[in-house]
Length: 378
Length: 236
Image 1 (cartoon, each protein chain N blue to C red):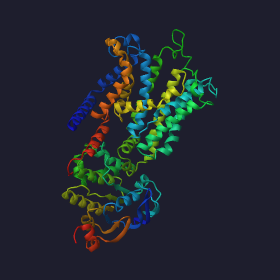
Image 2: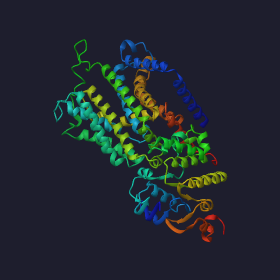
Image 3: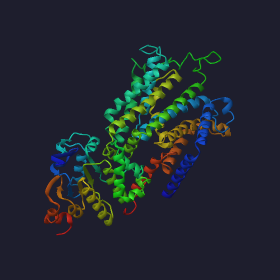
Image 4: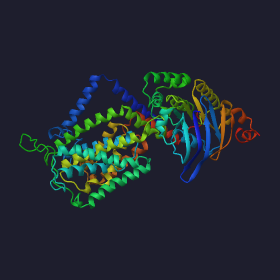
């Protein structure tokens, strides 16, 4: 099986090489074509022609919006888990902090009743989540591995339970309604707000645009000193420290950046739904984002994007496939089961994920070697 | 005196790993710390590099008390370490591993110079420049660990079991290189189970037993000490 892994890895390296060897113009055209495709995707006249790709039983634009904000979450979590190698099981806690911050600052139903516009509340939400990341990270990032996972898990549950029980601020189970949509003054040709209730497309476009900017930012970070410090910490924290890397500082940075992106997706979610309560922040969501990152290939932004796309879009797509194929059984009911099976199979045959970073792949190969050491080394 | 350790104690939970050890390393020396498994050799090294907090005692390096200084700041002060089990970054190439050694340095010219020096010491690493650290053989990883520590341009180089898991010929080679590094002006403190090699190349040595130093002397003295011979050199 090891030989097989080697082969797959070599193929991945070849594909990467082929892509990099293409002329610059060709690569740009490919990227622009992909972006155009992604921006056109939620239009009915466009996706109606994509027979097997579109969702059958749910609104394509809505599914795409959900997928896109899920992708944004995965990109954020990837900074924490993929780059710095910190196992964060409570990522949705930050998502919740972001969503509640927006809700409390904007909704007329909130205790504070200050009625900020959504656009103004977003940077506030990002700042608050970043701060919450630092507050959570400062004592806990001294822990390693499993301990950190447990603490973050506890954090997410604390936030959710607090939101569910607290009547004074979070309104308990009733939640916070009437959160304004983004930029209500922006009117379409029909005189209605672009960001309304029915049409999910503008939200998708907004999120897609944000994702592009976040990816650009994250890519620049990974190529900087910060990125190299993260890789070193992930691969061997002790060794990183005796190379002079201030490990705690950079772990905290990863945590804070990840939290900020999580808060940003929370803000988007609140702006779209215009109602939130604690049910939106179930623990399974945290696990699902983590699964997406691992599935796609931790440590690679594009891996995280693909993983998140598959994790969210595929089950929605499967929902409609039964009817389209004229099957008697309702495939939709089995979609989580199918997803689980896919995950397990992946972890057995391709633990580094669909599209891992070059380094990650080598790390996995190294770990395999450690698990099954060859005779004496020379 | 480049390094002075006074009465150092260290705890793992409730277990005391070091019972007040004192030792010193003079500038320009090679000092060997020998002892059996579990004697506390690696623990001592981790205390010096700052990876383990100490319970009491003092670590004085280059005239400053660094007992409470963070590990990454001790690197800047001049303590470089090749850790036990090599600690090579498996996903980084040989070149990237070496560049990590220079992480806290800004002097580009000096870094380039040291990189050339490391490749000169270990021609094998130059050949493997673009290969991932995790795919190297044990001996090559050891070379990389030593080379990477040299990239921090240390005043004091800590080597933890540089001969571990290596073929006899490579052990000989790595010790020769350690001697060369020392002759070029780097002070070396090394921990070894291979007492024969370590003591014959060291100016001075210490024998560590269950967390305490039981003997010290010049390398030759210890090499010919009957008790050391029996316990660590495998001859009666």
